Length: 399
Ligand code: AMP
Image 1: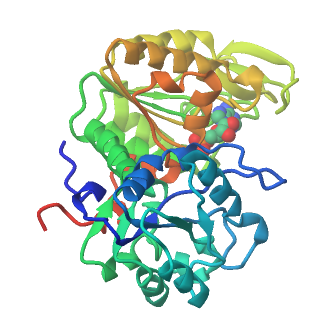
Image 2: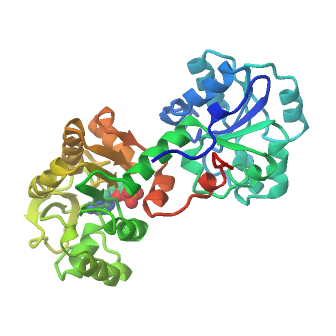
Image 3: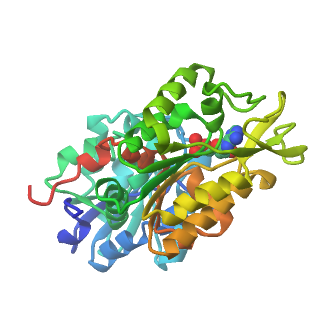
């Protein structure tokens, strides 16, 4: 599928003030150090393009959830430092994202310079999509580019409101790449097309399951949500994760899906929810009262492996077990190996962001996947079939 939005490369950036919405929401430790700079690196091509074209590059992002207040621990300053190192340019840090001091800094910028604005969410108006706030941001620049795919499911001022004030709203390279991979697989998948859905709860994924059931040939279920399905089938699930109020929904989904939906045949159960718990491997018909299901078992891996190897398109969202604890990460890692092997044999594998991406990284197989999304919530909403506000507000190519 062709990408139909105006791209950064369609714009003349020379000597222009180029305002780029990026997603620099990088994890920081207690000392304020960046523990994973993947989000920063993912946007470099776009920033470099604007710098090399002679733009005055103004970057804006949120970090964490400061809820409209200035929270020093959520300052973007460490990001400016890391970006300076990576780009080998002195990236200047603004004291705020709007206001006279920021305007002054922008006014004195030279072509090829980079300025990072302070955390947008220090202002409540950002998440409120406040038009006045959006206008103040827009007034800083001549050109607007959105490269923050991870925020594109949010109708916030720097993502949606701001687009009212520019004639053209362009996409950055990361935005283009994410949309291309995620929509290609949904619109025109090679078949068999399978989805692997795991994670904690049915409630967080039911819209994805419903949307994908119409599109995929097979849907493989794992993770905590499998137990609500098993309960809906009348099975004993011990103290495993259960969403009591979703049992009926699980029943309906099972009826509707028929053979398309595959459930695990065995699982790992633990006597406590901790890493050094006692564990047993049981069939899903033998889960013991009081025990907790924490991972899929080897028979399930074998059954799912067959589907994964035969697939031509694979979407994966959500781990198969409590992968953060090493003894319960096996199922997820084995599935990652299968997806990697299938991808090596020519299938297209698209991994949702958030925990799914973290799980793949834990398996060390991130380079073996076709695409790992940088946006957890955003990729989930695309898989739900929703139109994302931050994508809808970009300018179409033939407008
Ligand atoms: P999600 O954000 O919905 O993809 O859920 C990811 C979380 O699901 C991870 O933190 C996993 O530890 C958790 N999870 C996966 N399997 C289970 C399980 N069997 N019981 C409880 N939590 C689980």
